[in-house]
Length: 261
Ligand SMILES: [Zn+2]
Image (cartoon, rainbow, N blue to C red):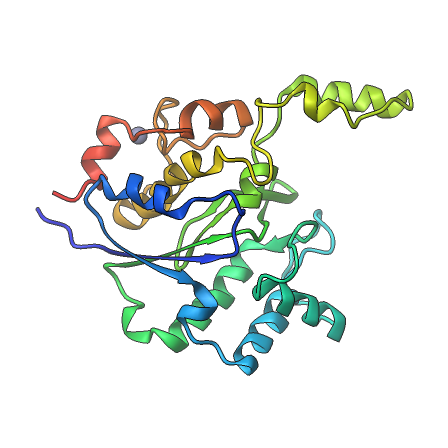
């Protein structure tokens, strides 16, 4: 059976070290029809007014308290909206902001649906590489995520740094240092190479695996693979990401189910 899936990829000022060509090259090997559309805002030709509306919506879905699910949006003030406009236009860093992933997805879905309505249907996959850090509420608190399946699928370069946990002893030592008034600034150097950092060149070799998770989900409806060697495995630790997602490949079973024949 031949599957026809058209994948549209956009970006939203993801990590500066993300080499999208490299990512596309890796995903292309599986035979998908992929079109890279560049920056989302530019591609959709959003007007100043559209950008302001998008900024107002996105700034209203930041998470004020990680232990409370965001059932309703929180209207943002003018400064927050301006700062969000700057983020959308790539003039301001996103670090330190944390958004509700499903709300972000809904907002971006509406934006896409207004601009590319005839492409919002089955067989079309929209995927955005973003620097925006988002989370989902599970087990009584928000957890940062690398990938959010759906339309559009979101893959976050900040999430790759923040979501998978660092080695257990890293937290232990950090806790001890803080308790004893020690210097924690050297800790990241001690553990360098054992987790992904912001603007880490490794990001380009890891993100194809997450893009495949999102694309695979659209094709098969299966979110993750149970095989801990498969790049569609749901890694919870930085060590797993560096082992499984870095230059990772799908297992035979996944390959069979997602490959375009
Ligand atoms: Zn698999």
